[in-house]
Length: 178
Image 1: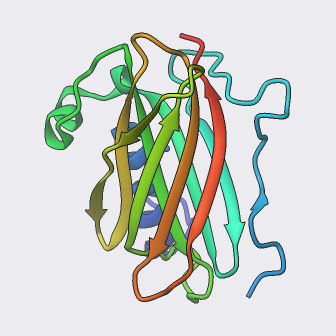
Image 2: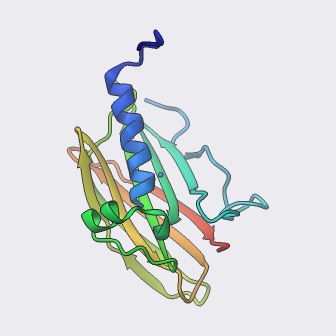
């Protein structure tokens, strides 16, 4: 049975990759512009429900960086095993996607060197180990945050897309309410 809706295969694949990434873990003159609410907004960084992912998006010269955070406990068992992530309610999953805005394909993701750190309220800095996941030519990066003893994370993400000298930097605060 066909409903007559035609969705380009690439767009469908990209949507599947983005949805999978959230469940695994979700020339421009506006360089570094924040597109999502930031820590200065009253509700920024709050996860008000157990399964609601938190996101941050920034646009740079030629790239868009998207970060999302959700509970590890929302993963199904197969996905948790595949990516080596425990279904622990005290783990938060960080997912990162870098899109190349210069590609004709709107959903083009790029490989990059990614470095993520978070700072707690005591000023202690920890590195978040990020791993790459590739599905159907789309690349995302994921890592975990231990939320067993803290609920506020000040994240610093640096990414350098392969074959470029451009450094993309994103800073934001996350307040986990679970």
